[in-house]
Length: 120
Figure 1 (tube, rainbow, N blue to C red):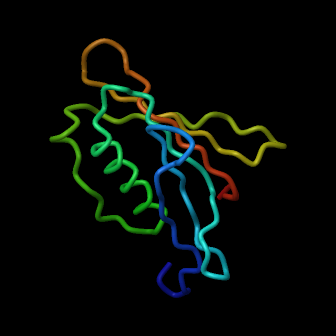
Figure 2: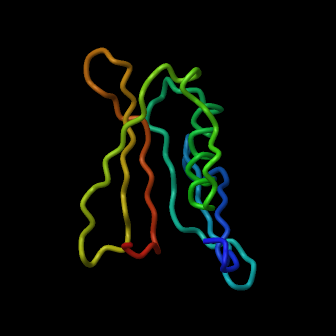
Figure 3: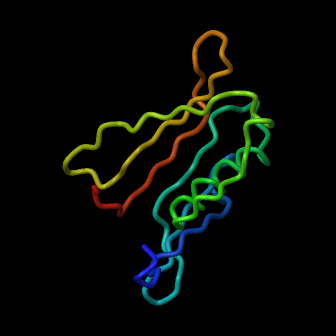
């Protein structure tokens, strides 16, 4: 919504504890970045530069942007996702991404885990 000031700005950075993983952050009221989740690339064949572009699109969406990076020419596949059912007492939302090339079955690509989002 344009009529209210954006109080949350999302960003990401490499996860220092886990290879092929990134931490997601939301700027808090003090202007400091607070961790809200992680994005882990499961497909070991995927180039990390491409994986980071996919994550950039997620961050852009979280920040309310709609002009995303076109990645179809680089992936040559469809990106599918599944939101795992959320337990009532668990604040985490887990989203599993899959890539599908049009042949065979889809393949797990990445896992996004988010905390601190209310159901809308």
